[in-house]
Image 1 (cartoon, rainbow, N blue to C red):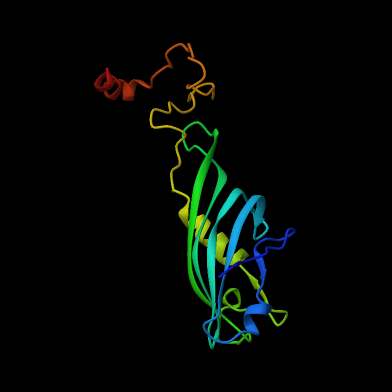
Image 2 (image 1 turned 90 degrees about the vertical axis):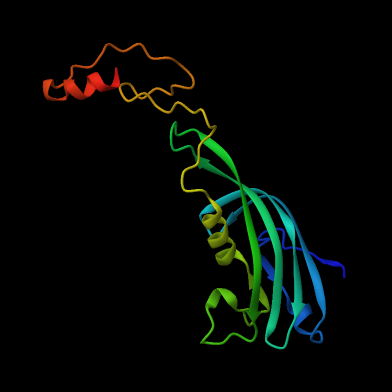
Length: 173
């Protein structure tokens, strides 16, 4: 089946009214090629790409597919910005008409709009590694002056060592 057009202003709000008017089993693809967008108000991503396959069911619309995007995150060692690839695998039933016993992010509004923002934000954030490093051999920040040790070598005099810790210092030497 052919692809459906995305809303230019908000590509994560899908108008699925045409699907809801079709028989059970009808399906359509949603192709994503979005250069830049903000997911759910606070997660900036670029190069959002992928395909979601939407199928009309008796309960609403079943959405399945994979989206990838790039997001800027900080290296935990040197604090430089790193471009992290994020992946979201969607495999959800979005209920229509809205029901009180179903999570709001898994419902289709009365206006036949399916909002991917909350679920996509959750999946992308869960895909961010806990400790992102810009590269394996990242040297981090200098503990004395705070300079990035990947960019320059610091020449600091030895710190005065507490005499009680001198024995431990000798173990490092």
